[in-house]
Image (cartoon, rainbow, N blue to C red; front, side, top):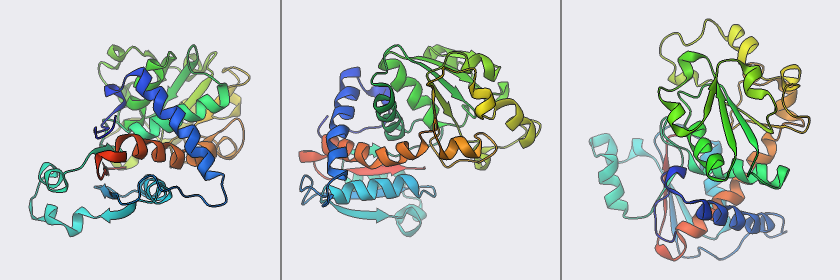
Length: 288
């Protein structure tokens, strides 16, 4: 993987995903030390290049880079030649470095999916044979697509449930089971992944009202009874509390949202180490 771009989970083999997750477990040990720093990327430069507002993902990458002793630069397109019609490709050629996709449009968000896989492994000890229900705004979600690829490559069954207007055309070709009723998606599920309604990307009427969406597809403890007794609830954040996910599940078990956030730094440390390492300075680009 050294020196390669990481653009999506679709491009990774199962063995590569497993290697990243195993490396992330070692990086978790670094996070438990009193001095949370190793010299792995000393002398390297990491450039955070984000084209949309991002706090969680960019901060996670920045902490990951600094814990690996890299020099971290936050690059703003608004203050660059990109405001003078320079294209993303031009910028990439100028920076001449491996690219790690930090989330692009509705395409993919590979590091989010990888940290989700890591969190499930911690909770369940395996992914092979699990049933994963992905619920919500699948149409606009880069997280959904990456998680579909990731969970399936590691042997899980994936279901998706959303209003018909929020189901991408042809998503069945990815091997997922599409259902319209939330209960059908949750039935016997080991993992329930709730997606954020991306209000900033909604153009037009995708559902009658927020209240009706919450009543039909919002996940709370009452609806969670259809899943397995030991099912866990995930959310990539940020959460529209009380809409797609109830307040108590966002903060307490069986919700594991805080574990996902904690695992983000260790997972991104692993990605930087494996893809950047001796291969030069990486560039994290995205629109998270």
